[in-house]
Length: 279
Image: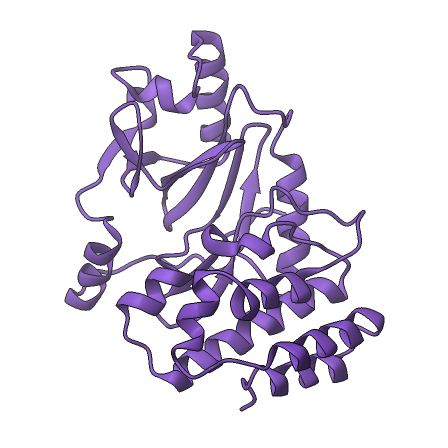
């Protein structure tokens, strides 16, 4: 399951530098693994309860993943240091490898999950249908994967000034990826409130992230959940509706009901038509 799929070495150019500025990822604090024992860094590697032996074990795991340095940057903050994200199960940092940067999920020591194995399995399965950031490797306490540099969906809609056609193409891609997950029996579990789970990269491609709550043991509802989020209720549906992309509620509910009975490609195409995202 290792390897470096989808991870390219970054070269500097002004356009890329501006992308990083927009995401707040310039001038991060870059720390060699040997220096993680100093200052506030142990509080993040062993968040929220630092223990020296646990820190030592985790640094060994990082070396086994071929991580050379960690970068502290991003919009969230722990112990006064910037990071990419913070959740109930893990923190997200940037990791530096020989081939470039990757996203690193760090299991919280107080997490209800005993390891990162479950999320790694779910992400690997999603990758089999070209959904989610590409998994690179994982250990008990870390999940290393492709770094998706971009904006949460709402921010992309509000700040990137996309055209109606660009929005339609993106919405179609999101629905398509949700159908692929449905087709393999993988339920994401968080798409009815997907504000933190869809990132739009700088090529205007949608990426579904965070498979920690995913399961293959419950009925899949990715397409139906994402349609509720995008078109039927909440602030995102209002924003999309103002772009003159507003499917009729009754028609969409009828299409989703038919899709539940028969989650086929043909039924997905009908949802495309109802949602006005055909190409």
